[in-house]
Amino acid sequence: MRLNRLTDWLGNTSLRRRAIWLGVAASVLVSGLVVRSMADDKPAKASKSAAADKVSAKKPAAAEASKVDNEPISPKRESAAVAFAQQHHPQLAELLTRLKASHPDQYTKALRELDKTLTRLEKARETDADRYAILLREWQLDSRVRLLAARITMTTSEELETELRQVLTERHDVRLQLLTYDREKSKTRLQKVDEQIAEHVQNRETSIDREFDRIKKTAEVRKKPVTKPASKRTADKDK
Image 1 (cartoon, rainbow, N blue to C red):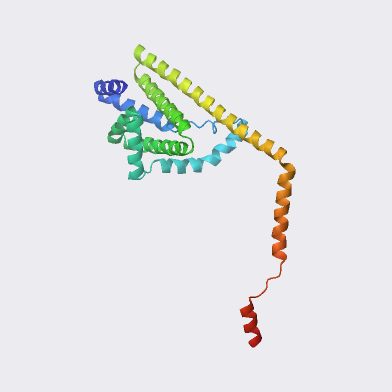
Image 2 (image 1 turned 135 degrees about the horizontal axis):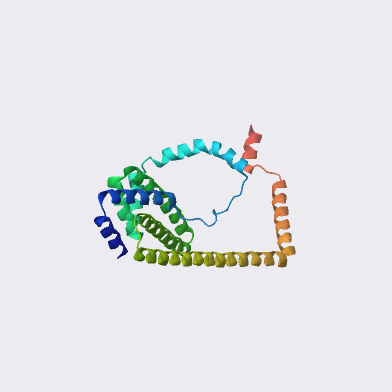
């Protein structure tokens, strides 16, 4: 239903306004498609002088990154990214189709960011399927927020504002779900560490004695002289 509303809105919008909206939406998407990594979200505080020093150092890297962003990804990765969008975010897939026809450069950038998102989500799925499901839902909602924000820059209505608030509320709840899930996983890991600590304390002497005996046996074996086989000794005497 939301996809139909977006399609109808694009169809009823003038060509000029549609092109402007697509450009705005593309800019929003390329700046925020990558999944938010809670472990990487560490605020950094620095003085103005230190920040100024970093700007000059980052210029070559930024130029190189911009060059890479404009390069097309492989057809295989493009197909995977588009299929991923079609399956999990039809609105985004629709936007990508329109971008490809009208804004190729923006399409390439958006596709590259989507590919990064897909790569990170694939890694998360391999590690923890349950956490992956939460991250996927968070990404879907985050992308919807950005698309709605792009639409509101062009036109506003009570319906749009209501939908935006609903999506923001759902995204907030999903992020809370992710935090809760991570906390429970941390508790499980901590419990395992506590069990290992208890085991080390309880079996201290036994563990030390076992390792000590193993090392001694290995050392005794290595000390034994290596004797030649009887047939070889006989052959050596005949010579």
